[in-house]
Length: 432
Ligand code: SF4
Ligand code: SF4
Image 1 (cartoon, rainbow, N blue to C red):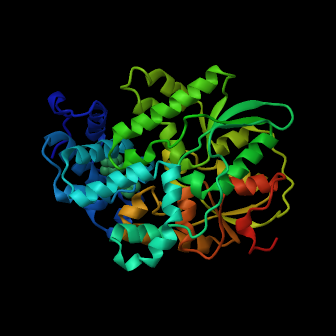
Image 2: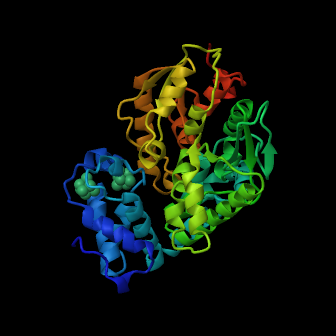
């Protein structure tokens, strides 16, 4: 395998050209390997970023169908981008992995069962209504568990037993309380609408109390990360374009200061809309504008004059910064800073740069690796100490909660409580 740039006639997708340039940047130095959760767990070069760069070259350069070996080791990649943070040569792993996954799907090398399962995930998880229906059927599924295929049994294993009623279902405007400082669009998302109503409650309460008008735009929904990471960029682009259109519409009708995202996995994707839609003449400019105005919730809160009067001053929080926040968006300190200024004692866990194993659909498709990484992360957070675990991404929150007895909450729930909002229900078992 070589680092040669992909020949033009072999390019099946325009984005592959950019990915091929990244291939040429890899010097095979291996600095990234010890930052890769799958290499640290499996100790196999083929499960390291360097090994995967070689597989990506094979997939993208040769034009031959990907081998089962290449598919197996690319599938084990979490897309956590720990490798990108560690790489001194600027290799764009995100684009490499996305293009490789898309090439694998286009080649049609998976079994029929696998293809159907991945198609089902790409359709069901992006629709809050379907997802809600699936969770509603979970009790029946648990009764029939032994009869179900392994994929559905895994889904039942990770599905929370309780779910909260939706807070931001449908388009709606939440007016600012007092003088309006900003008008922001909140990404409604998909899975979080069903499983993270408390997170959306806290977000809307915190922002409106501090002068933000919060708009959930008609037509906005899943960010597109689910199909993108399943190797379906066209479907991801359609979802991205729908969001861009919805937010452009509200920009034209009243202006917009920011798009705010309270799930860091989704934030990473929305901030990449400019690149995702760069080949779409109708959307490219607007997507670039939207990406530039997108903020993780912690970035936006840091800009607001929030006054804290923390009823649990001194409560100790073990913080997990999601890889989508630290590696995907380069935000490493703002959650700590905000929680500390709110009066919490914040402890970081050892190996805080490593992924918890959740990684979107990864925990469904690679259950053994996901569970080992989840248990490792929970163990590290135990070493950090504290009464409560906090994180900034619903998928990490739900995954880590399976491996720890401590309550796990979203950072915004703590910030909202500390600035006059309600105490998170998840803290009922915690004193203070
Ligand atoms: S650190 Fe960067 S250049 Fe070095 S092997 Fe990893 S990806 Fe390649
Ligand atoms: S994205 Fe994460 S799992 Fe994949 S190669 Fe990079 S560090 Fe390893």
